[in-house]
Image (cartoon, rainbow, N blue to C red; front, side, top):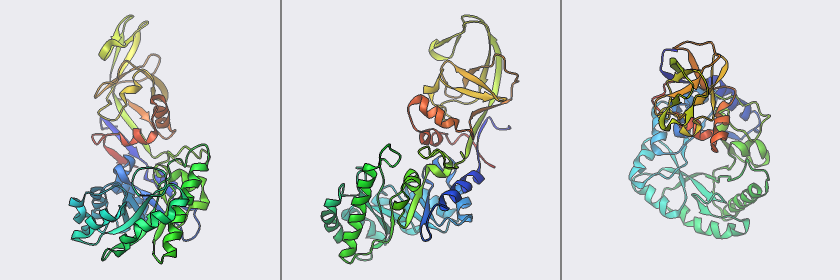
Length: 363
């Protein structure tokens, strides 16, 4: 490995994950690829291009800037901005042919001042985040009435309607079914009033696989694309990111020597210490200090002491290696989920946290 550290991204794994999901869909149902947050750290432009080559026509981002980036790279498909674009940035939507999630009539009026961006109406059915409020099907009529003025805005282009499941990967289906019931009740009410809603979508990665009856016109795939969806363990997802670093130095320590800031580790005897060229500024959570093992030449080497900004130390005792050897932080065996479990977070956060100074290498 020539680089100090690198994240190797398997585009084949990503397209394989996408095709496997698409094969579960009925004719007429599309897959929207979520490439926000730099494709969860995997690289939005290369990922979007690879997916467009296999027939994906719909993409989602979090911000107008993210949407403009992939549009300017040559992506021709539909691009939906899931987050809320500031009115001052509305021209970015129009100039890059982006659809905008819309959560209120007032917001829609702000958006159309300098153009006519297309919108997907967002319904809050229980996430309690963005959207027209409708947490129960009994509120559908009230919700629809609040939305009707939206259709009176001159030039408004409603291309879709969606909601977001809060617990699709949970142990029970009750809340997801409640959300779906509220969402479809709003749609039915709007249609009864003669209003078009466009493309209907509600399933995230977990929902797509666990609730096929809720697919509607389109499903959204985020973490599943990158092979890290864990709620359906028998689905053939392939993790797409492998992160490696160099073994920067090797040295011997004696009994009672301490390691790193705060001297949290004390050697119980002589040991062979390695220094890895990767730290929390690269995306190695400091909370993994002394709690996780990386791999070198196929063998596990535990972290010793606290992770530093640019380096951390490992125990190389009994491992055949030399300076410059490659150290795998996590890879295709799903170790990123182990890292997340140790520190009480989700694997999304780990892959999104691999910073820009770690070069992405596409394989």
